[in-house]
Image 1 (tube, chains in turn brown, yellow):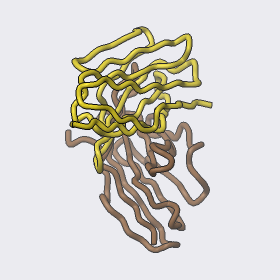
Image 2 (tube, rainbow over the protein chains, first blue to last red):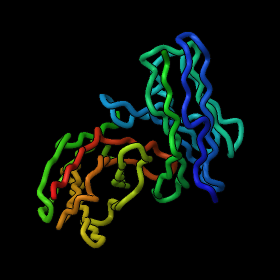
Image 3 (cartoon, each protein chain N blue to C red):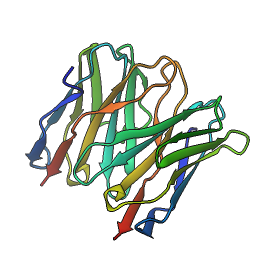
Image 4 (spheres, chains in turn blue, green):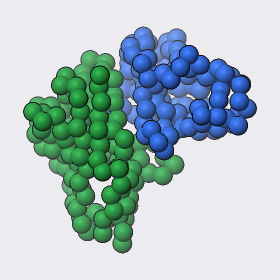
Amino acid sequence: DAGVIQSPRHEVTEMGQEVTLRCKPISGHNSLFWYRQTMMRGLELLIYFNNNVPIDDSGMPEDRFSAKMPNASFSTLKIQPSEPRDSAVYFCASTFDRGGTEAFFGQGTRLTVV
Amino acid sequence: GENVEQHPSTLSVQEGDSAVIKCTYSDSASNYFPWYKQELGKRPQLIIDIRSNVGEKKDQRIAVTLNKTAKHFSLHITETQPEDSAVYFCAATYNQGGKLIFGQGTELSVKP
């Protein structure tokens, strides 16, 4: 398995534009997490899915953020409209949830909103 | 709600010394506690984990201890080396699809 795959690796966009980040979890994993990493806030959990169902989205900062997981092999995080304060590294991670197991991270998407 | 507090935020040690990072968690249902290492510009990667039925676990130079009564756990690195320099994150979760919450991170610097 190639691991958790995120795209794009880097995204530069203008304020007000829509941004879509993509994640392909490891095959067989049934929990998926989206995190935002900034210097000030560390690894902040935005939302997590279990068996493709959103379980907790209390970390999503505001209505401009939305996430979907239409099937077990794909998830998206969308920001519309984007703002400069959304600039951060966004990580996706997946795990097999039985018994508490290692969560594997993707390489992250570095988002810059200008 | 779930919360994980981590201290210190920065730690500087001399090569060969030991380093200790401490975390506390709020959710008594938490029963899985991983530690991740993140090198500059890279993704976090698991270095060691511990489950609630164990009080201590060791892997070469790193060890983790867990006190469920006090709801705190610690990472111990002995004989530190410059390549141990990184940001370390503790986390807590619980089984059956629970969310994974991270501490704020500790930036460890090992000086030669």
